[in-house]
Image 1 (cartoon, rainbow, N blue to C red):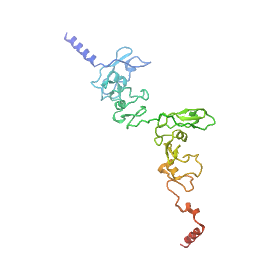
Image 2 (image 1 turned 90 degrees about the vertical axis):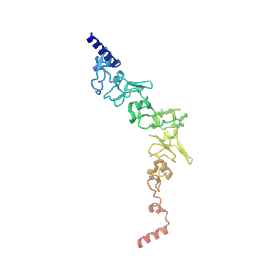
Image 3 (image 1 turned 180 degrees about the vertical axis):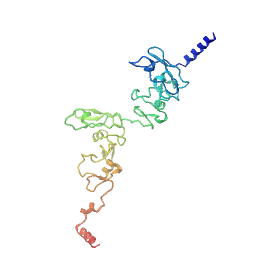
Image 4 (image 1 turned 120 degrees about the vertical axis):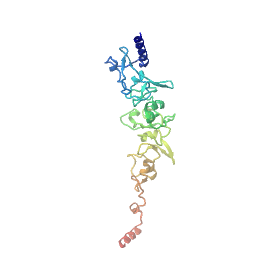
Length: 305
């Protein structure tokens, strides 16, 4: 009688500690040890129990799976979940595979695209990557501001091409940053950016003159910002393109500053290109401007000295 009671008590204790029954998907294997990922190696002695041909459970869950695991998986966490927070069950393994965390979806690479939230990032990555990016495609160490788009589309422009008729082929690719920029077909000849960013004065990546004509930056001194700077990061108020198609000998100090920034902010005296320093006060740049008599006097003076 005593032995029967002891067995009964052991069974009750075992059943209480057993994990939740789950399914592990597999086309090839029938046993839980092969169908399911290996249990965590820490704590030790964790194993899968075969409930039926399709159903498995961790034989005995640790007292807590909120931390201290090594090699956790989503399947393990579904069987031995961590602490539920804000009605979200902790049935997914964090990115480090050390805990079962309350995320709205898996922390792994099977996650549905563009579904990250700040709460999920904090649960999955902790303080390393606690913020969701504006487009929700991944997590970031710092909080990034979402790009706000104007309600109105960009200005209608033409993109020259002899071979293509669609705007996506006729025009250069829109900037890759901010994301989500696209050309819209207005007519067979006209194209426009579907939704312009609130500002194109900075923060772009891969801008073009065509893009800037459709989504210009801020006009300065009555010069519209319809050209991409040399770094392709902004639409700037230059009198002509900053690129290789610029007419020869048309550079000015103002154009050099907006196209190159502080890197090359001065136009050369012949206006052929931009330079780090101005050469307008050098002897050679002023050579042609010196009156002949003064030039002869200067040469004689140098010979005497």
